[in-house]
Image 1 (tube, rainbow, N blue to C red):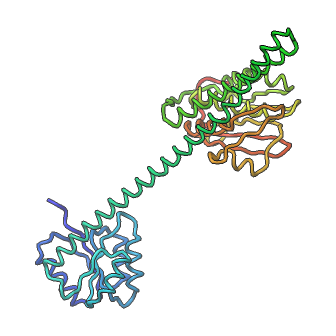
Image 2 (image 1 turned 90 degrees about the vertical axis):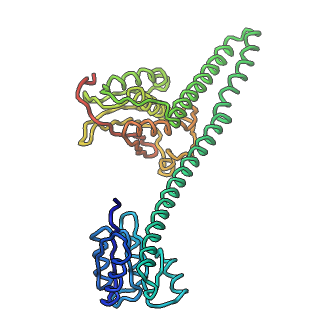
Image 3 (image 1 turned 180 degrees about the horizontal axis):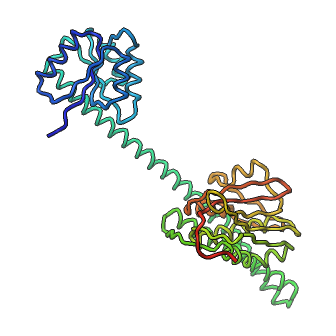
Length: 382
């Protein structure tokens, strides 16, 4: 058996309330009726209880009807089916009330048991239909936003493939052609120089492809996230070892300060984030500078920082670092080139592990990237 319809009647006229009460009783509609003698009481009851339908008199002495209607419709929940009752036969007024959100308009003279019950049922049905429409609209908007994001991501991927990935391969082709000529003339100095150029271009292309594949996997949700206890110092040491040669070429000092901390993370994701951030730091730090990976216990977990004493960035550049529509790349202090994709990948990877990547930077003083991960008991960092 269906639950009775919960009805709130707001009407200052006791005679009219009695007429509605009798009509509802004769209608056969299973209901529970609550009565309010004025708008203020009616609004209070609507806030305190749950009603399927509100019968609202148009003329109330203590409130403006349109204001009260707006307040009733704004109450939290799935919305209220508000049915207007009036002693006036005014089509223009009915139209205005319907535009304001009332679901029906019934003259009191026409409020027979059958018409009143029918109007209440129709009002409830329309409210349910509107709720379904609102939900469908919200889902459509969410899908539209997802499609817009996918389109921007697709555009970004195409732009990287068309521009960033083409550049190192153009270098490879050009350098290999020059290298062929140098071999023919036995120009050993030129051969050595061109070979290094080919290696640099190949390294750049490979790093870009790795970032592209990782980032694409994230967007397609194909990269599994298994959170475990990870020794921060061990991962940091591996990352620093991988960056040691590039750092040595620029005369940079690499330091680790994790204070024996262990974090809850996905090991490969954490390593990828640190690798990208350290690589960026090497790229933008002048000879003689220092790059540090540090982990410090805080009240919310372990704060991980990758800091450098490099060239830094102005505030405007910092604000655009993680914006997909403003992706840009800047050559490093030794002319190193990148795709501008690494930081977007880092942000996504950190968020996948429950963190939030932030950055602080001051021109000519350096840059610090930081994020927090949960601390875990277990293996200690060396």
